[in-house]
Length: 601
Image 1 (tube, rainbow, N blue to C red):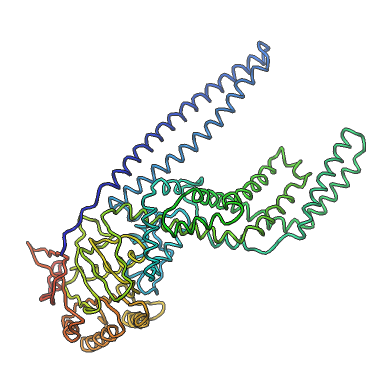
Image 2 (cartoon, helix red, strand yellow; image 1 turned 90 degrees about the vertical axis):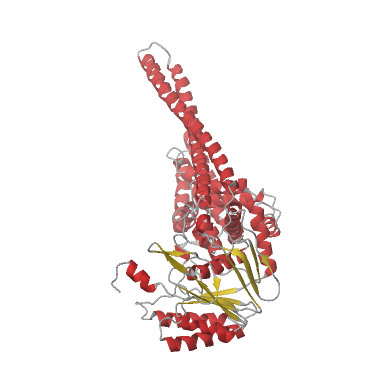
């Protein structure tokens, strides 16, 4: 057993320094807001006084212009200050969440990824990848749904190509050093978190044409101009109302013939306006970044292949949406209707979507990928004592020194060494209840997932070849499907056996194997299963309470060995050291636990 490694205080110190700075800024902005609010009250009182003096004839009404103009300027200043306050509040929240993560208060905060859970997955539920207190909740800092989707996909299917894993490590390390960028991305947009839905936005961008012949846009423009000329002629030249009303009737006829299609174009783009604005801001921020890691450089270059950066292309349609919204102002609406502004803007939006919409999927993928790397980069920066694993190209190896579970706080995290490879393929882990057997399996599995994500691992050192994963730690019965726990375990084991023998070796983590059947069948079945997995080039760990299964390792030696976790009674209480020892456990604590909870055994 290796000693626990104390967590470095450097990330916390930097977070605290920035939190203090942002908190001071927030307090300053709030004081400024209070002063502006007081000035607004004062200006209002002055306006009332001047209004009264003007009403009784003591002064000219012209004097009212001063408080009215001042009040308008103060309103604009207040809007700007409120925007700064919201930004400062989000910045404070950003660093407070970082401190909570560093101090192991992250569980239950933020998105937990439960929506990505899949009970049929070969290891996701077994390793607590999703849900409250999960690896996803600890790692995820994505602002958008696209970032969460990408991170969840990577967790479920870690990379297995050595060079690709190393590229990921470089990208993670690059973003780990870019705290300003990570803060900047988190602060973009008007909301604390906007669910930028890639599927919905992509589907909208790839819709076929909705409006008829785009030349109708020029017809609408012409009718609008002629209607305006008719109105001017009627009001100031004396041509009479007929030309004006004829043009208005033509406009109404055109609008009525396509109003349904106009709504199909305008309503979706207005609904997605905030998403498009956020996407433009995210892309604009990435377009200005000079990355050093090759994967990030590739993503960055993908944003500059066209004649115009994506952020500017999206900004064009955002401006169209703002014009559509402003055209509905009660003072502007009559003139907008006369000039057929809504119709013309709908055709402009349609033209933009048909020309650019197919690019949205790629832009969203870029943002999601950078956000997923950013989540891993944040995790790396917050765990500076955790190394990046050495990824081996050939052979079969899992070689860990001081391996610990990344979700267990440092002061309770007991580390163990573990070596599996071409010579020693399987460890049969025996031990008492609650002694740490299952935790050891999760520790190995979660660190493999982290390693192949490109993230640091909780160890002093880890060397491994890429591995497929299969586990049976959380296999459950199902009342709805009418399957027992034993049958569910058999189904999962069949899937795990199917993963073995491929070009990428399998790491299997089998907890309490076949505990739903009798001891004789259990021993024979377990030995044959493990032997078959070894012959297919797999490595793994098997835990058991049944000491008879320890004979599996003896029969498969030297490719298998027995290890155990132990416990002892001290002052009437069970004490666990959570350290892995060689050999088979020589006692059980089941009866002692029964008596400890009050059962008369």
